[in-house]
Image (cartoon, rainbow, N blue to C red; front, side, top):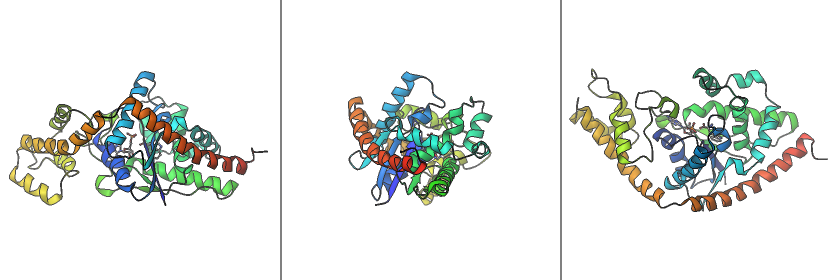
Length: 311
Ligand code: AMP
Ligand code: TRP
């Protein structure tokens, strides 16, 4: 069976972009693959330095995963920091790639341009992500468009290692659906926590409504493009064309329809989420990390032998 793997950072509440771009495709594909779903808490450490918030976010995102349909019986759901082989392998990859290569990463450049502290962790971030993926001989990684280059970096890390020490790593492929590659936020830019333009996935109906009502509409246009683009994640083009024709110029009504369409999808997930306790999460992550460590540990034994530290 081929392997599927993805991860999300516990750096804040999940938004519609995270769900449509990464989590939903993961859940859909997980039936056909041996699947791994990570909480990449050490990646979040590059930006989040509040222990209490990190703890809360980890518990929260695990509940989000399960509520969104990830099945802990069928998928290995785990937390990156429970599998120290990830940081160990990241170091080895860092010794294989150059500084100029890492300097070209868009995600790094964007964060620095936004004024985030350029800590060394942020800089080396793609090599930890490469380790996350390559330790499990992953075939497919469902992500949003913004992660495409990071998957290329993972392939490059695999190729560098294989050329230097002999074939050990499989080169992974990204899975990016064109239709949802970049979900726009309430201002029309990419939906992102750092742009404060998100629609929360597990917000209350009121929170979702507030975010939808804040979508910027161009009063000159007949059809509010920003509303339509988000709406197209929930309805087919023909359904929307009827709805938008019937409500030409009626932005409030269209936003109201969007709120109801989001609510119809999210309400059952929200209900499921409320039934998951912190202790359920602890048990699921413990079992997941045991399964993950068995695979990662055996791969790292091969790596240590290959690089010459096993004597
Ligand atoms: P992050 O919030 O950076 O941890 O992103 C987690 C996952 O969600 C990654 O696979 C991203 O590519 C995906 N993602 C984040 N924002 C969007 C967006 N606006 N549209 C589509 N995918 C997204
Ligand atoms: N960099 C990804 C993001 O910000 C998160 C991530 C870390 C990831 N390791 C991964 C995604 C491995 C897929 C596979 O969204």
